[in-house]
Image (cartoon, rainbow, N blue to C red):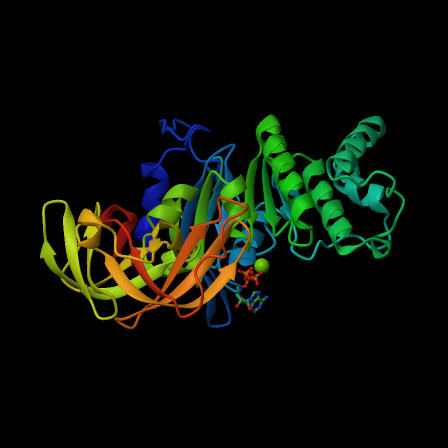
Amino acid sequence: MADDIATSEPAAEPAPSPQGEQRPDPQPPVLRIENVVKTFGSFRAVDGLSLDIRAGEFFALLGPSGCGKTTLLRMLAGFEAPDEGRILLSGEDIAQMLPHQRPVNMMFQNYALFPHLNVRDNIAFGLRRAGMPRAEIATRVAEMVALVRLEGLEKRKPDQLSGGQKQRVALARSLARRPQVLLLDEPMAALDKKLRETTQAELMELQRRLGMTFIIVTHDQEEAMTVATRIGVMNAGRLEQVAVPRRLYEEPASRWVAEFVGDINLFEGEVTAREPLRLRVATATAGELVAAQPVAAIGEGRVAVAIRPEKIRLALRRPAGDAAAINCVEGAITDASYLGGKTVYKVRLDGGAVLHAAQANTARLDADGYGLNQRIVAWFTPDDCVVLER
Ligand SMILES: Nc1ncnc2c1ncn2[C@@H]1O[C@H](COP(=O)(O)OP(=O)(O)OP(=O)(O)O)[C@@H](O)[C@H]1O
Ligand SMILES: [Mg+2]
């Protein structure tokens, strides 16, 4: 199942333009990963993974710790060889190509700076080895130093830098040669929120300007959604789903993806009625729910109705009119977390489920919201639910 999604979706879903509309993609992929397997002993760290990356794409890999993200990047960069499968760069198998011969650079998760070289020489290292003229190296290094805001620190050695500064040196070093494909393994994990946001914007601008292809690994979902044209969600060495950020969030392909990306409420149940545009699902913990008919046909087995917290309305009384008739549940507030832009409430429903509902804090002088133990009514529309089979 996961294979089907991972291999078929890139072709079925052309790169969206910045406005979001789809256009056909006549270019062959710059990188084709075909059924790649990597084992350590009997453990399959990457387990038959296939993926096409298009030229000029900013692709993000998301997945829990240990799911094989770094191992995959190391194979693309040439530091590990796949046990099975092929990696094609612009249509050519690169199995025999050494790391420094590949037009691919990798920024490592642990930075891997040369301790005896200062900032400038760390950044210049790959340029010197590639035989770039001195004057050009000086210009390029200065450009990179400015990009990552390290002016004034050029003569420092890595052990005289903070974690975030080291990370910026590693980023500058990996960008300096302007590789065709740049692999970034958690490039911004050590940066503070503001610096991270400006670096994200600069990376996107640079990537567009130079026409490079970026593959970034990040644990930060917002970061992935901000920078990436497409996101691949990895689990246990496989791709669970590959999609544009909006589809990943609004149309997750499985319970696993739904729960991994963002926060979501899942209600397990069985389909009891199939109406022209919607399904009725009997759930044990939230009663009968009504969901819009999903695009793919739903079989006979158990399903989950999934609803994101921000799509739930809360009120002290039942809504008037039609809204009260479907997907309207009652319970008591058990927890309220004020997060600035929104407040997330946990509601223990009378049916037993705990519902997460997020309310946007749109007015500064709003009252304190709902209190603990307060009785509350929650409702949502069928179109805001997703029915998941697997
Ligand atoms: N050289 C190795 N020998 C044995 N096992 C390894 C080796 N390298 C990685 N692994 C194992 O392979 C799995 C995938 O590791 P990998 O580093 O690719 O994970 P990751 O997705 O990058 O995780 P993280 O988000 O924590 O960086 C892990 O279970 C890891 O322990
Ligand atoms: Mg890793």
